[in-house]
Image (cartoon, rainbow, N blue to C red):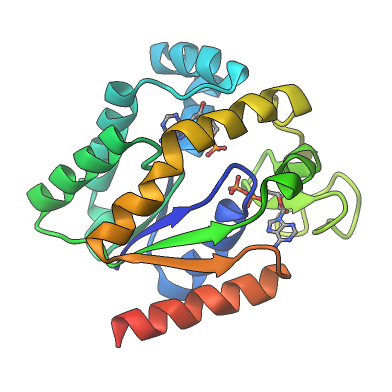
Length: 217
Ligand code: ADP
Ligand code: AMP
């Protein structure tokens, strides 16, 4: 199963990917996570990515496409994968078509988690992420049992540097300008599905799984 989880920043892609990974046993490929690892390691890629991420801008297409091409060629992707946060531009979507064709695969479904703009800043600013395992929480909507501590592994929770009102405003503008056009792109391709992301986390998961069950037949 080759899936794309789409949605504005803060829509719940990472939260839902964690459930789908467990249910279907295929890896989550999150370009934002890959860039954060590179930033932490201080690599050349990390330095380039950090400047874009801090400003709420996209990392250049050629860089992003390169890391995705390499990642999707790895052995653990042979039975499928869940793309989270890629593609974000029409150029990336075109490149993904080429990568999939080279791998002899097709897209199973593009799942858009639809959340209105007015909810997204609050979701992002309240987001907390585990430094150790990457699990995602929200101070209000999905709070950990003990403040600042991951339920899954006991790791420390932190707030992402780009989860500020100012950066998030830029990220939402970038989403509208560059990423939202992909809805029409994938509708035309006949692989587009949408779920209501304002519902409780468990209900969004249920809706996503129902869509996938119908798609797979
Ligand atoms: P994305 O990966 O799309 O940027 P996340 O999965 O990191 O989004 O979710 C953003 C924030 O919103 C997190 O703090 C998460 O706990 C919270 N969240 C995710 N899904 C929901 C939901 N259905 N209702 C309320 N809050 C949610
Ligand atoms: P995310 O973790 O998906 O919210 O992404 C965090 C940041 O990483 C974004 O604001 C971008 O700066 C960068 N990024 C992640 N995915 C992409 C992508 N597909 N194309 C360009 N930049 C990306």
